[in-house]
Image 1 (tube, rainbow, N blue to C red):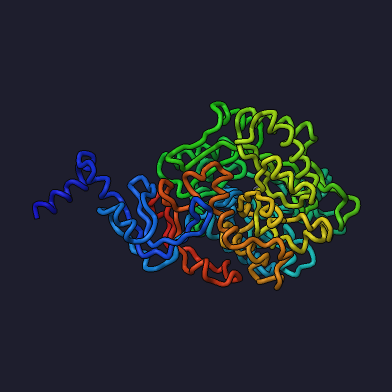
Image 2 (cartoon, protein in one colour; image 1 turned 30 degrees about the vertical axis):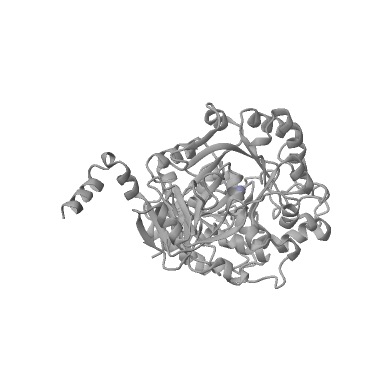
Length: 558
Ligand SMILES: [Zn+2]
């Protein structure tokens, strides 16, 4: 009795003075796991037990016996035979974009205009305190409407406040009359360059603004406040934890987001490790880069040591820059956002400051521009060790694929883009150029490490959708049956590696995460099936039961 009291007091009140005992008491052993991880040799190994200390660092992995010997006084958590994996990493997402999407009305599941209008009306009554009603995800094709919706239709369910609803692809927005008036859009407003105000036969602006015309509205949209940012970050972190992401690379942040990340890290509120890229080399870069790259912050929860730049646009809107004209539009090559000199100046500026440079490049001309610039600037800045990346690397000529390896560039790719884009992509680039499109196998075969991600919220953040697409080259509907260009499939082990160790490597974090090995953090997930013993065609159905970061449970499925 006396002994028990003593140890209780020791654990509760005088931890520091109890020396070795307190350390041992704070250790945790995860038992009875059907665990899988990559090891240092790159093999997949199984484990039943995993022990970590009070800092969340792994002290042993292996059989129950092996682990028990290393942590004799630990508390035990019984996994009851469930499958345990290292936490998954999304190497390219937009965290605040995801949070914004989750904070707005989601119209993506609506199948008719009437259904959408009902949802908007309900949302308006449920959110009376919002000055603007914002939403996204509508698609008039899914409504079988044969035309765009109108401001008048929107006024019928929400006329008291401005309403702005973005189309599913972000290339058009639907406004009510209030919003149009605030934006100053009238029947007489001319179409801006690169944009269109949708009008009826009489020239009346009917409520939809396409491409650059959306800027007329964006100018009057209220800027998100810090409180809005917190709501977005909370929602995004919850979502990420629920799908098994313990880390994400945020592809483009500014001063406001950096401030929130540090604040969340300081207060133990970051439930996923964030590896952030500064968006551009403008004023935000100048301010954030004053003290140089931030390799690690808040117990390795946050890092800011990369810059995100753009070479070109997207394939769907024919904004991706191609070397030869689009197969379905002989008058267009797409567009490079910058001249070679301009992009060279930006890349050199970031590299000289010691930042990893990650450039969005979709078309083969966009990829070539960046490969050429990297080939010049990496040796000039002696920046080989910074692990520079091309984000998307979507359409690459067969001659340029080997240059990724030769120059030392990481292709950062999103498997679900391939299965979402497959029909459109082939129309855009034709049968020949498609051979270098979404070409994971070609990159892996030459020894490139691919960092995998989703580009959420463009695609869903669920990394099992990505692993599924990488392994099967099928969408979640099982199409096409034989896989889309199945010769570019990854093996399950490769896909697993691209969403764990190689994504960690692309963020200079392979010593801390990406696998469950002694010395790394106990970032792991518990899932509802055995990933390595199931049909690959069902991988997208995998559900996450628990998510742990640094030995702390941050999500448990209800
Ligand atoms: Zn992106």
